[in-house]
Length: 132
Length: 205
Image (cartoon, rainbow over all chains, first blue to last red; front, top):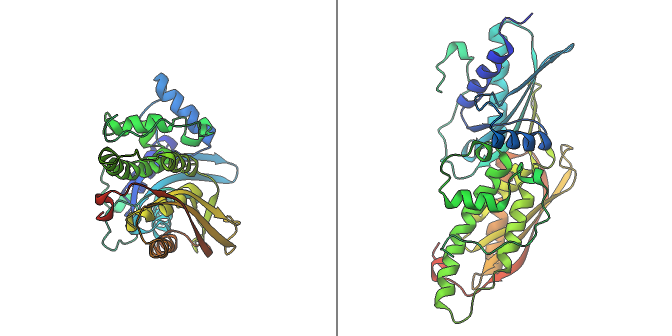
């Protein structure tokens, strides 16, 4: 049984991802057709703008999380995507629940962003400040 | 036609999903409005963001050329603009998912569209160069497979082409190493257009 409701969990994960050094944005996951439908739904005003961009699913094998991110070029996509994965995995460990299959995809690299100071791996949300 | 306008587009052969239901014309209008009011459907679409990045760079060059056009006896040939725009729209598609290996067992990757976008951004480092089309040839989904990058480039008239191509190749290589684990065995640069007349501001960019 889940300790945290799924709708709360995806909001928390999105917050963790957004606060990870190098992440310039969180994008909608899913198929190209699904994103076109999403655009149409927005145009018709039938989509909740506050809906999380993180996809979470449960089945018999457990929880799976799918996140699409933008990266500030100075941080490097390879390093940033690993930090995001570690931050999400740390959150699941912190919650003490089941492990999760985490899929993270870089979908945009922001080449105009400034170069960074060297970042450290993120701590779980319960152990740090989250900037919204 | 103001300084930021781009010529009317020929049919680009795009499907709605290529830019998540948006068109290059919509994105151009959105830039005209300085991206205000913020449109979440555009800003949260990776394809649109990749195309917007490229369109913004293209506009800077277009404005310089229009200034040169106004001062020249003959109008600037704008076929290269259409070719670059076609490349922007096609390259913004997500394409294949390129794996990034992870010791911690994560399923990590970067889209082909994001990689093409960052390859295109190498033009920032090479004044006079404008990337039209970018193709990753090879099995990018198999780690270690040999990959060849092919880019088509428009070059400002008067720019030393061998030097420009060398610098562009270096800039692309640096970006690919920073963001991917691709085994790049070649970067082929095809100079497809010479942009005339040359703008003085282009040379000092």
